[in-house]
Length: 278
Image 1 (cartoon, helix red, strand yellow):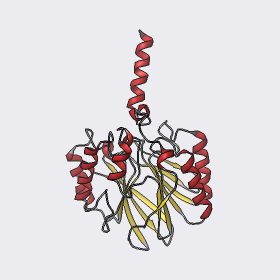
Image 2 (tube, rainbow, N blue to C red):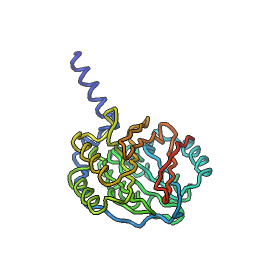
Image 3 (cartoon, rainbow, N blue to C red):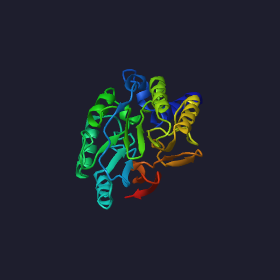
Image 4 (cartoon, helix red, strand yellow):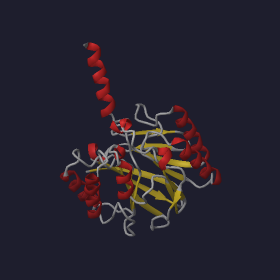
């Protein structure tokens, strides 16, 4: 009886963890090797050349966990900020349902932007998270709700190259990792900013699951002049310094009422950030 209770407890922890969850049991869901084979190059947002700011949110978990009052509180705070674009680092939809995408879109529209199409005045860019894939049609829902409708892409803005990676299954997968290395081999000098859902490294299990992949990626980042990694997934947030670059894991929007305001200076090639609470 005790053994059965222990097994049930382990199973409950497995399916409720943000590291894994029900999508791991859903054999019909797409995998990163199918979604992210070749990078898509998109046009950068239009913004000031010397210095600009953008807002990052992550782990909003729209659905039962996000109330309308939370969105209202955020919108009040957002009106005080001066940002050129928005980046969302995934787990936007708590269980990958279209209704959750509709609720998020409604909030973004009140910000004067759109998650589904390119807004000239306030562009919105998205990264896919594991919760976004929980539904059997999670990839279809996510890809039609979030511009640029692909999970692996890049743009260059001023003096920085931005890389948006697909870690929705807890790994980059072989095709994406090898393609990313080819991109880096063509350009090792331009300073780079990496946007991804899973942290590369964490003091917990809430990070990329394969240690060999983590080490290889950190080595690639060091060689390619990466300056900053922004990630989500681990709700309390975290920071790691790797010498030539750092990783900031941002606190959950839906659980900690937090976002991150990032300022980039193209002349000094500096990146600064501050947490925004609402």
